[in-house]
Length: 64
Image 1 (cartoon, rainbow, N blue to C red):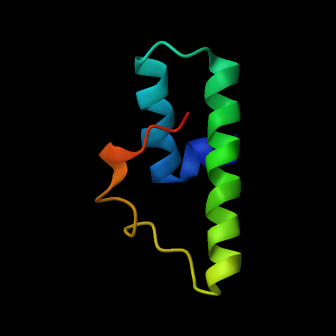
Image 2 (cartoon, rainbow, N blue to C red):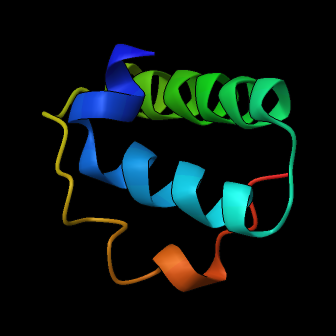
């Protein structure tokens, strides 16, 4: 829930899912899944999180 408030990528992602008519709990679950994938990517690549990395490809991400 905190990521939806402070993480700009999560906020944009959640707003897009809500605009598509997804239920609130489904939006939260999709954001949790996306956050887990972000964490895994940071741990796997051993690099710091870069919010601008996927910003250019944000329109290609469906989420679910």
